[in-house]
Amino acid sequence: MRKTTIGAVAVLAALAAAGCSSSPSSEPSSAPLSPAASASPAAHQPATAAVLATDLRAEGLPVRRLIVYTAATDPNAELGRQGGYTSKVAWVDQ
Image (cartoon, rainbow, N blue to C red; front, top):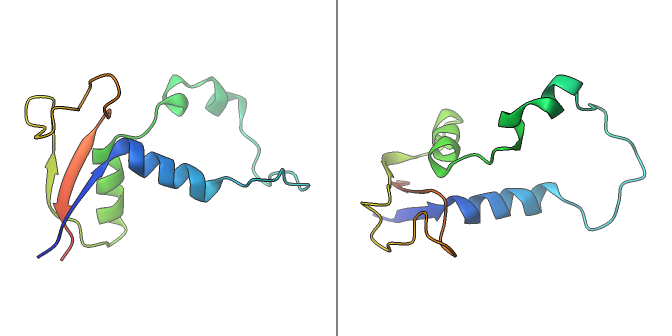
């Protein structure tokens, strides 16, 4: 059995790297942001690890026995600390 632990920082960094290009695109985006989307404060909030894991599960990936850590339950005591991570989850993927 393999256990997978992902901190939100690592997940968000991977998602950002996958969606970014090192060179600017010469073509405009096909879906410009609406004024309502850019003015929304929720649009600027990064997704938590729990939300990302739930989204993975909803897409049919094998996310089982999901554990959402809090500052009190984080075994590394890094959650919410300076230089630590902002959210953390663990799950079994088999």
